[in-house]
Image (tube, rainbow, N blue to C red; front, side, top):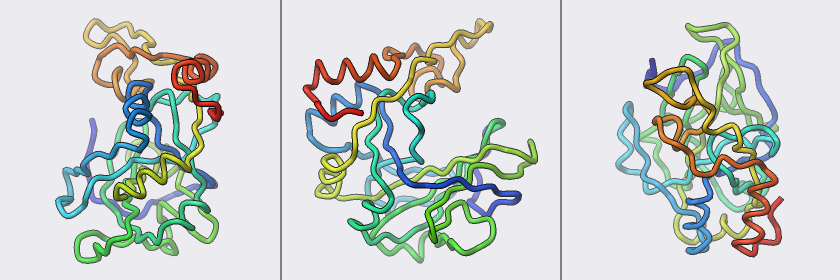
Length: 231
């Protein structure tokens, strides 16, 4: 059962280094970005807080090793936290928290706008904060009602105007992901695929059209999009 809750500090937290963040997507979404030469945003929504004051956002998450299966898709636009913070003067706010049986996600907003009267400010020095900034770190584990060693993920919504979305498109490294575990079958007639391997398609019971390995994705991008800098 999925629970949508107010964001809060975490108990029993363990951290990992946060050197880079990535915006991950399927090849179909990459095609749209490539044709427009920009990153395409989405409206920010929440079942817990009012997000109407926020413009469109780009969703990022801590970067994964390319060989590790990535449930979010085939291609990542990846940028270092140092380069990101040299470009932007962010304020940092909590959005909400989503608790799953397998993990908990804390969603945070990075924005150059002042929303102090709308959202709670992230206090990096507070015990149990999902993010730390002295050296950037993110919470990778916490306690929950399910387990004392419960996986935790930080999801980052970056509010960026057209100029900055274009800048991110140009300055992010393009990384080929491993999405080959998508379409892993189940033994259930109600749900044909394991939902945890593809957030875009399998999660909703649909077939993923691009269950490709890192090598396959890199080859496709190089041949179809003439991108010579994909890693």
